[in-house]
Length: 490
Ligand code: B12
Ligand code: SF4
Image (cartoon, rainbow, N blue to C red; front, side):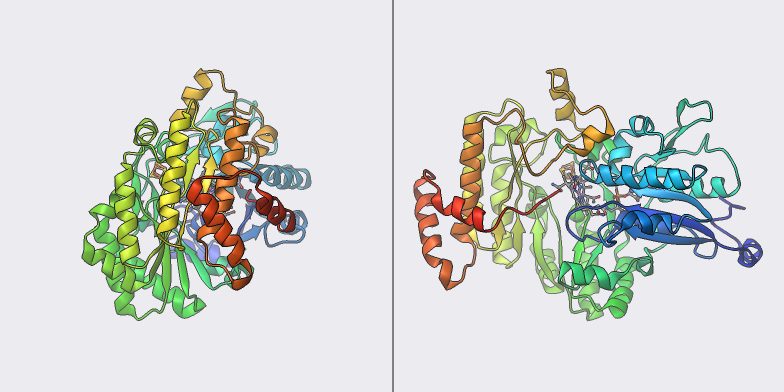
């Protein structure tokens, strides 16, 4: 983009320095957990700081997010909002509408997972002018650039726009770029200490890659990233982490990548550099079970030495037949093998499962419960959360389910009610199965977790039940849930 206001050469910098910087306001809707807003860091950091003043507002941090956004709109060139499917949509709508009422001339840009899948549908909402599909750094930089120059967005790859005559126009897609070509994420754009406080730990969220090469039929990643993966070069990444460590003194890094272990040599090099740097940190990341068994033992050792404390390994089902159907491309035996390695290297695990795939048999649900039971009993540090299948938009299973008559929400308001995690289990799980699974989850969690002396008796009782698969009359469960209601997850 030579000559652009965003990627300046020396002359342009000098010329623009005299002027006021362009203000760009970015909003992260309310959500559960305090993961740092990495998507907004990514697109905000890519704008030249000499030219743009980036203001990030996080709905989770502000007592009155709407007033916080409105107070920043004066002179802003656009408002960018990151939107996940589900509950965050209502807040995104509320803020976008309020912004448009206050500044009807302001361009409102939505990006992230929901607009990437429903680029046109989101534009039925009048307060949204532009939607960005997939990777956002370059597309957003070009949007800001064009807006600043008063140019049309027609032809700007990667985004969909509403034209002045009201029709929706989809620009061509933008090829996925190597993440190394982007500027390092500027954590100075967010109040890092505030996130530490709210998380209750000095844990930095970091994203080291985008996309995924795999093809799981329940996941939207293959649709959004076209089964491509791009990752940061490890030496540069380790240097960046060290700079951040010197500045923020965190003691844990949570890598938010979809598949962190995609390239084992990258992981090996990163682990080596972390060890050499002397950073005293722990870290957590995602791994597929097939990657775990292929990972050479010396890399496991280095990962552990560099601070690897926990892996998230998606199992999804205990039945090889279902794993095949959902194209997970792993076998259940690989999960046990990877789990055994984790045990040997003293690495904790999260092994999430999904039950209630369309037409899933009782036998395969039972296989999932058995598998969760086996993993959970291997270590108190192995967690086996069980979620109910809900059709993730963009995935192959949704296309299949829709063909069989399943109706997806049709408006943004209805999508906002579409709760993936909590609530109803979907039409594919009978009320009896739902009851059984909920009881199973409760007793297995209790049976194997570390508990204080006060709960030992309850734990013994839970182990007794689990040993016999007897979950009738769950008085302990009802009493505990009455005392401590379940945490809201979305
Ligand atoms: C952190 C995270 C969360 C956090 C969000 C924190 C926050 N910021 O508010 C929390 C814990 C709240 C969360 C919740 C959920 N999440 Co989540 N989450 C993630 C995770 C691990 C990282 C997101 C991230 O920061 N990525 C890094 C950035 C750089 O990538 P990015 O978000 O894709 O952003 C790029 C583009 O999308 C685009 N972009 C994004 N926003 C914007 C905005 C603008 C204006 C522009 C121009 C561009 C743009 O540009 C960015 C840079 O290229 C992703 C997986 C992943 N690696 O992305 C899953 C993921 C997004 N989550 C997912 C799911 C399913 C869920 C949950 C259902 C729970 C669950 N089982 O995980 C809930 C649903 C949300 C809800 N209803 O409340 C799915 C997709 C969901 C969807 N369709 O929206 C993902 C992809 C994981 C997966 N493969 O299943 N999640
Ligand atoms: S579930 Fe994980 S491995 Fe499968 S396609 Fe999605 S991101 Fe990739």
